[in-house]
Length: 154
Image (cartoon, rainbow, N blue to C red; front, side):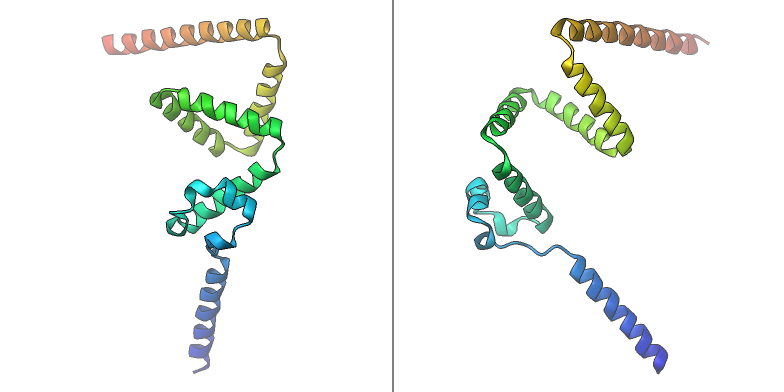
């Protein structure tokens, strides 16, 4: 009997801890006034959105509210550039971003640092590096093609 009570208690505690760990949905009326302004395009479907998506949108709204006007202008400009890209290019960039997010934190930091250093170079030096990269990439691709051709001929 004690075993049954112990097992039942363990199951109940597990269920309670699982339920308490779940994120609770936020009702539209419970959002802050500024959050509602930022998220107004989502108001009609807010209650149907998964809780996790609601929380991500709310966090994004909070970050937007905390930004200065220059930062907002920069974000809007980048968003406009994104929208002008062809769907294929958006898809390719999204895939690369997902790959980046899967990298270890140290590797992400290294890439961010390298990107920052590249951004600090003059336009002339940036163009030289890009051209050098393209040439080396072309040579590498040519080498791979020759190797594949050589394998097929064997």
